[in-house]
Amino acid sequence: MPVDTGYAGRQYPPTAAFEVGREHLRSFAAAVGAQHPAHTDLEAARALGHADVVAPPTFAVVVAQRAEAQLFEDPAAGIDFSRVVHADERFTHHRPIHAGDRLVTVLHVDAIVERAGMAMITTRAEIAAEGGEAVATVVSTLAVRPEEA
Amino acid sequence: MAPRLADLEVGQEIARAEVVVDRARLVRYAAASGDFNPIHWNDRVAVAVGLPGVIAHGMWTMGAAIGPVVEWLGDPGLVTDYQVRFTRPVPVPDPGAATVEVVAVIGVLDEAAGTARVDLTVTVEGQRVLGKAQAVVRLH
Image (tube, rainbow over all chains, first blue to last red; front, side):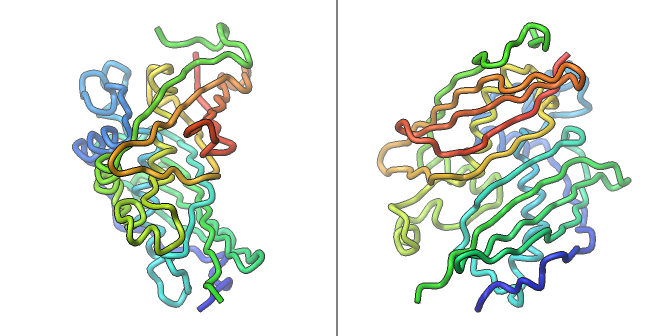
């Protein structure tokens, strides 16, 4: 089944809150080899003026991918994940993410473009604090390879 | 000492690092990120979809490449923008490991905005694995 280009322009309702935990930030930092102590050590983070340990710059992908699942796990969208390749990714941080944050995401499908049988899907996750404060914007483009003839 | 905008020059190298990635690290990243796509831990599945074998998560490579910049900056909260294109997969052998080399250079200085653009060259065995890898950082 081909990707349904009619999903372009769609906006999903806000997700349930994602609770950012200290241990989650510590394990994410360890996995990517992020060695700055502000990711793991509360005192080091506070010494820099942060309220709690600070997320590595790409941690927002974890939050964004929860929201993106609304599109990718929708069978009607026709996206076969085994044929998906990540093309590009961009994070814009309006403020750092800290342990203790409760983040709500609104997913936008900015574009679905077909090119030589390949579907390029661009999503934008607008991540905000529960009170509405903008936290991060995550723009991701995935390429879906055509099925073998 | 945190770097200061006034002390920087375009073209200046600000960080250089090697990050080693083995299968255990990919499993760790899968758990921490929630990305359990089997092409990042199962050779059989990776080969079936046309890959040479298990490859690193692109998002792992992106996350690993910014670490040396954060250490140079002195505060992870000062990275305001970070983008990459995924241009080439990073195969991770078993047994063994792949080594990702990161070189970070000042690309643009914007004194009015108080920011610098850091351009990253990220290679494995001399071949670029990320394209247009750029971070914008705030400096004092």
